[in-house]
Length: 254
Ligand SMILES: Nc1ncnc2c1ncn2[C@@H]1O[C@H](COP(=O)(O)OP(=O)(O)OP(=O)(O)O)[C@@H](O)[C@H]1O
Ligand SMILES: [Mg+2]
Image 1: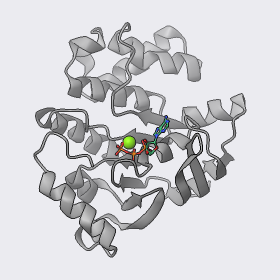
Image 2: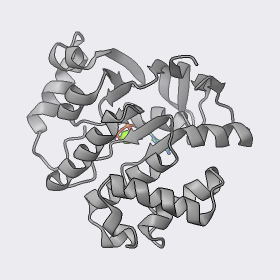
Image 3: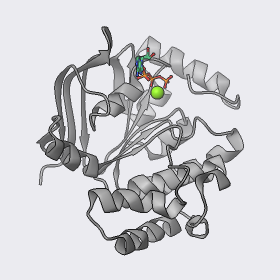
Image 4: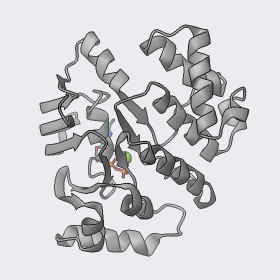
């Protein structure tokens, strides 16, 4: 088994005629946790979405666990089972209970029976401290609880790679910490994670590598502490300084 889990080469993507990603190369080895930072509009979400083809790349190559991602249904299904996605806005189905939200992808993508899927769902929810909320509907939960349920849903399929797009940025500061705690818990389990977040404490403590993106290109990457404490590029330095000066404000995401 190769140690390489994700490999991205020369990735270009955009919307309409506007190019957003202008040639991204990125590798993730098994067990690695990478934090992606960058200003608003730099292409972080687009990069994450290209991996399971939620956004179709213009050119370049993406490999997930050796498999070249393409748009045929069999490949997409396989890639989407090996990558869990957590969005900024949770994206839980409001008309389904939490346990159904977590169980559904197991039935659809893993071919489990409803009973088996709900058993697995409950065990993942319990692990994340949400067992008591399994029978509730998303809108009966706090934002932090909904986001943790979304993390449980992504984890339940046991993905090789977990993709998280600013999982705390929609939350009030007092609700963020519980999601960050959950992220620490997941990170400790050794799963590979690619996470867009401006939670610098988490990046410093849990990430192996930090990647800084600006205007669709990787400007700087390296060991998490090195990049955060001693950025080499002026753009990274300026971005980190701005971000740190905003800590405590309701929206410190760009
Ligand atoms: N569905 C879309 N259609 C058209 N343009 C889009 C779409 N999604 C994103 N864009 C544009 O692509 C650029 C990159 O967006 P993207 O969401 O990847 O940035 P980001 O780095 O995630 O920003 P943020 O920190 O605000 O989340 C932006 O200029 C954005 O307006
Ligand atoms: Mg984004």
